[in-house]
Length: 434
Image (cartoon, rainbow, N blue to C red; front, side, top):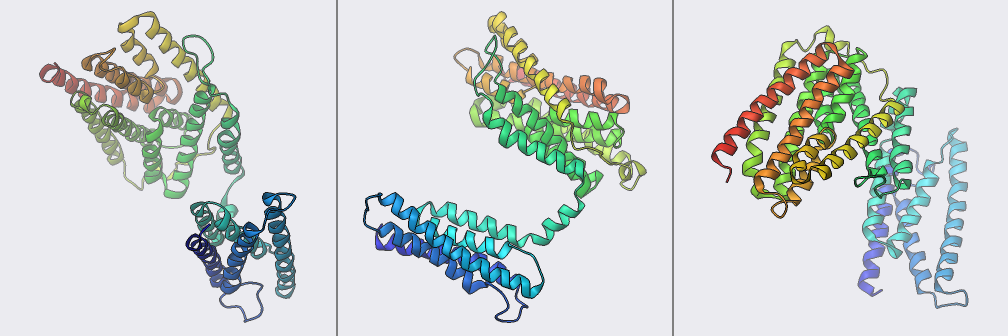
């Protein structure tokens, strides 16, 4: 390590200490001088101390145990000594103030560790971790207030969702299993995570933003991942009478509009020359979906009882989410089987079946088959067929799960989008197709 790099890394270590110390010093800015364990100066020195110790350890000559072992021993002893001194002072501060808190001690240890890592590791990681730690320290009141308001179903659902994502997902095999190309267990589990996430997102949005804005915001965000997941979540809530069926249907309309635009974005990124054939139908369908959403939102007054009565009782049910994800995985296998059985003409058939679950996968696969296997017109037809299939599936979901006015509204939505999009597609192929 040359002199310039050494000075730069020590400066980052000092800056990390100053950043964390600024938050700690600001929080205790009204304390009497000499009554607190550490302020901005102490934290700044702690970060610099970690950097200097790491630099000294790195400069040690190789010993019999090896340079890595010598570095680890010196860092470990220095960190332990620093931690003991800091904890003793923090204990005395707590006794004098009559409080119980380990935050200052832990923050000081982190500052020392970040300073040491700034010398030995990636500067970006050290700086980013320090910023995250400072943000966490600064959000004390907000976090405590959130913990006071959270309910047991919310906490349980959040823990389950995190476990599904960070424990279940990494251990699942990432290879297809079964006939006709099989199903990737990790992809099926991802479907379950998306379904659960969309449901939880809708729950949180309604709770913190209100029914009118919350449902639409959650639907728009969920539509980026899966409009089918939004439809399923809203259908269950309509069946449980957890909100206005028309408001829930408006959320599905927003998610559908996002889905149409998402497909355009995928095509634009992978095969821009197909846009001239794909975009008109999808833009027309998106405008129709937005029109339905606006009309349904304007149908009722914002302060009507149906808006105020929206209240979700449970973010999501794990068994139903996993069960439906397995069902969707079976649909994917069926679509692939049809595609293989009918050859070239099976592209559209397979797209229709797989489109019930995953429009994005169909879009990506079709553009990759162009122009070697499929012509431009055939690829566009398969993509539009998948989108139409996804739109029709919303009628089935509404009828099977949501029922009542929710199902009727989804039928109107799907029929309108199909009619407008189909007319635009017919005109496009009539005048622009080769």
